[in-house]
Image (cartoon, rainbow, N blue to C red):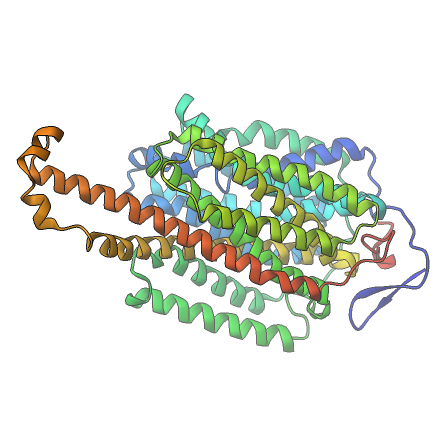
Length: 529
């Protein structure tokens, strides 16, 4: 038997747990294909348009600064809409919400492909992001609901592969579509995939119980304002020189004030946006902090590597995407291994700790990169780093839900995804800002060791041998200093991420190991509907 503690919303094991799914599915295999296709489709869209921005700019009449709103609008809309997923799922049913999300996402994708100017594109990307926001938590919930507890580790492994590998494949697919067809196909490709997903979900997707609960409009407004202001601050900060700008100060203060009010409201409201029982679960709260770290490691590295490979090493866009694929391969391999080990009762805390150590070692090796390296170094390091991240992701999700009642799965999944997105946004902004500042600092330090007077009055023999005049030699020296300064700045970012990864290791001690044979306990109140 398993009983539920009404005060904490946790499942307390008092005997054998029934090994049956919360929501039996008529055809679980086909349904899994549909759910995974929806997951990968919306995850790809977070990065697939990145490489196409230069091609969009003239067609949309945008500038180099304003065209980035194609990415920012999607990120902000997704972050704002994620918190409402749990309430919508209860209000209209998880099946109906998933179907509406897929249909809306496909429609918004088609409109993005048809956009003729930047305002239209931003508007359609906002719609696309809002529909995408609910698809990720719902897909995670469905994968847990339709599989029996003994199979949930394997199900989460499959789901995690789509979530983690999707952002890596996005630039590769986007680069190929842009080079061989048109940037608009980065959005049109969602139409046939989405139609297949919708058909499968319509035929086989069961639904959770519909519940009537009040919508916390005030809490949602506060959370939305906090997230929007924070995301816009992160996006605009580098352009406006961060806190040298009044705008950035205002956005930061608005985000901080709204977040503080949201926390107070969550702690005191009668029916808050998120059930307070979620935040009394030690594993779940620790999992939220880990998701911040994972978001930084996953997306900050993805933000650094493409410009480094293209700008300093001279790789074309498509080749750059291919060099990032080994990270995904490493993730897939270790996620499969982690799923099997967890299914046999292996301690997930050991897997998380091992994964963090492997990721830290890979980042340490990246701090020794040089401009003379070949592609083999990028492939090997990416494979190892992906393997480390894969070992962390699945056990972490497993433990976050291990002691959580299944009625909280959708809300819990939405919070985990929200924290991963916030971590990604903070990580990208932090490493980008540090990169820009360190390039300037390194340039000054390195340039101080080059005697400009010596170059401008270069020996005639040197000019004769090189075929360059003294002013050309000075320009060449400046270019070399810029290159070295940028490389050192990238290495500094890798070192910072290594320190962050190592600092996250003690959090493993806060996690509780799930009982053997019960990877995720099922709440009796949530069963059978």
